[in-house]
Amino acid sequence: MAEFRQADRSMSRRELQARARKAAGGFAAMGVGRRDAVALLMRNDIAFLEASLAATHVGAYAVPISWHSTPSEVAYILEDSGAKILVAHADLLVPLEAGMLEGLTVFAVETPSDVIEAYRIDPATVAPRAPAQNWSDWLQAQGAHAGHPEVMSQSMLYTSGTTGKPKGVRRFAPTPEQQRLMTETRRTVYGVVRDARILLPGPLYHGAPNGIALSAAATAELLVLMARFEPEALLAQIEEHRITSLFMVPTMFVRLLGLPADVRRRYNLSSLRFVLHAAAPCPADVKRRMIEWWGPVINEFYGGTETGPIAFGTSADWLERPGTVGKPTDHAVVHILDENGNDCPAGVPGEIFARLRHYPDFTYHGLEDRRREVERDGLVTLGDIGYRDEAGFLFLCDRKRDMVIIGGANVYPAEVESVLSGMPGVKDCAVFGIPDAEYGEALLALVEPYPDAPLEPAAIKAFLMGRLSGFKLPRHVEIRAELPRQDSGKIQKRLLREPYWRQAGRHI
Image (cartoon, rainbow, N blue to C red; front, side, top):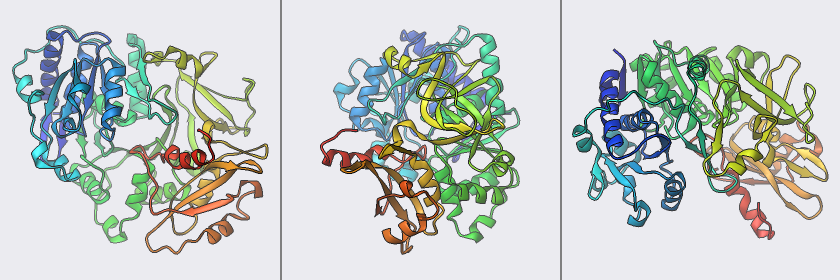
């Protein structure tokens, strides 16, 4: 019997599907249907799956919202998506003003005890209160949806908004053949197979965890949700539930490797057979150490909300070609193009354009012009620079917008970060361009050291000298106690970069 677990709570697939059909019946009675939007503002919770599946059942889009968002950011997505319904953890409704929820039907989900503990939430805020309807009470009163479920491909996810307001990626409904091939991709790339026992420590509002969770709801033997990633707790859950599959981001690897050796040896991890990571670059030393610890079960994919997974690589691929993010997946078309739209030869960086033949097309909700801006000859770019080797393996250089031009020469900060992350004592780093009167731009390296690591800017510059060409060396180095990262593992460079450009009277 397939099962869904979170802390001390569990539910069978039959129970989850029954509750989702009841919620779908309630949604339909409220007039929610094809291409409508149901917004979700929840931390990891089985109720997240109930509401998502219910929205899909009636042909609506589930619209997950990051619970890290400010009230104004939540209000923007609610308005932009045209959401008719908001399902939220009770405590997350407290900061929202009544005007932000005008015209919405709001359901409050009682905040689970494991979430309360993980985030130290005020117990006075966790119970549903009027005018929001109590999700559980309302759900019990609904009749199951009688119609056949609509075919929707995935949730409408909003981009991170690093270059402005976030954009809703709205994918069109797939044909039966597209649906079959998408299921195949999720099996081969995401590892969602019938006997999979999957643990998700990352937030369900992110693309890969969201897609894996919804696929697991239909297929996997077990799905375990963690309220919040904690390194030793993750190891304990793997052992307790005989987990076979995980989706992680590189910062989780770093925190796991930071555990004392005796703690890492304490847990039986032999059940693991498919560990997937993506979302941010993984330092070479970190990935090598994870493969040495967990074995050749570490896999990686490259892609985005707009493209789906367009490249996939195994541990063996990476060990043979360190730094690769894999080869194009089945049905993927990948081209590396120069500024004139010509294909770059092997080893020459260019902008990555790609598509999955079997993925239905998408648009940016209400922003069709922006959708056309990222397309060239039917292929879509995520704004990444990369190259392919002679065997066709894909390597990433950097984000196009992060590329720095110093005296006419292109410098990719990710290359500098890769070298810098190998320096003893460096826990995290971010390299980007700042205004420079002489060269137009200069490189700045922000370094977060491990506790008690005696790092100094002069020593960091000395380490990089000889490991990088002279024009790639950061002109400025600063030590920071902490660098801001999103839950996906991506450093929030815009927040770091903005003050330097603002001080120079320029915008980024």
